[in-house]
Amino acid sequence: MIRTSRLLSAALFALAGLAPLPASAGTVTGQQLLSLCTANMWGKGHATEAAECMGYVIGVSDTFNCIESDHGFTWDSGRGVSQPAMVASVVQWLQNHPEALQFEAHRVVGAALQAAFPCK
Image (cartoon, rainbow, N blue to C red; front, side, top):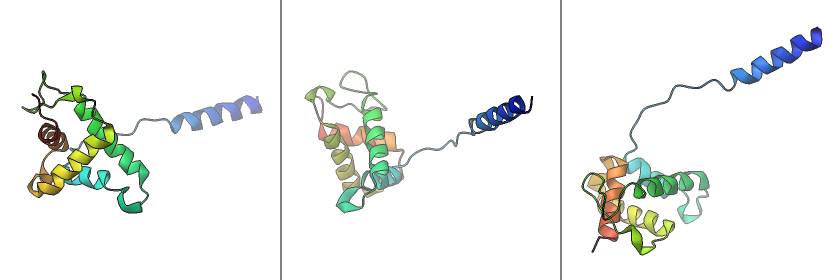
């Protein structure tokens, strides 16, 4: 009986660690995205942030193309552009447009990809 009680206590303790946490609602800005995307540059060694940047850019890029737009933006996804090239185009665009750092990051990605890889 004591063993069963201990097992039950251990199971409840483990399940308590799986309780969902409240989601924090927030919008990623161009500034936050630029920070993530440049976190691993110049030997800084922040691979997790760089991966988060790439995931964000790739995720947004998958939502639009020459046929379907995202907030008016289109880009030629059929060119076979590499993922690092997409991220580099976003970083370069943000560095050339500092006024956009305050904008929502998904719109920044749209503008950057449209500028770098326009539809024909």
